[in-house]
Length: 98
Image 1 (tube, one colour):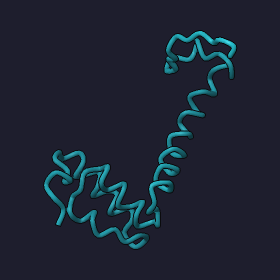
Image 2: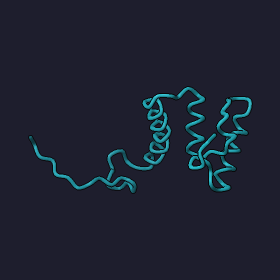
Image 3: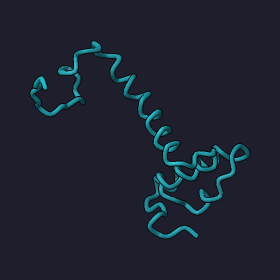
Image 4: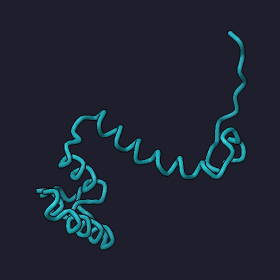
């Protein structure tokens, strides 16, 4: 039984997880989706059902998923134009030779 803290609390999340369960029907068995989990819990359940079990596997999957959008966003800028790129904010620093 899924604890209440891990259950979806709004209609949009319940609907999204239901749609996910429907899309996976006959393809991948994820019993936890029937318990109306939060979206993040549903994602982890699906990844687990796909065989993603270790911390390193999970970190790799999430990093690769985010990389696609980062590459797409960066295509509109010159490769070294970090100052012009709106979402990059590096703290001020001074490089000193050792």
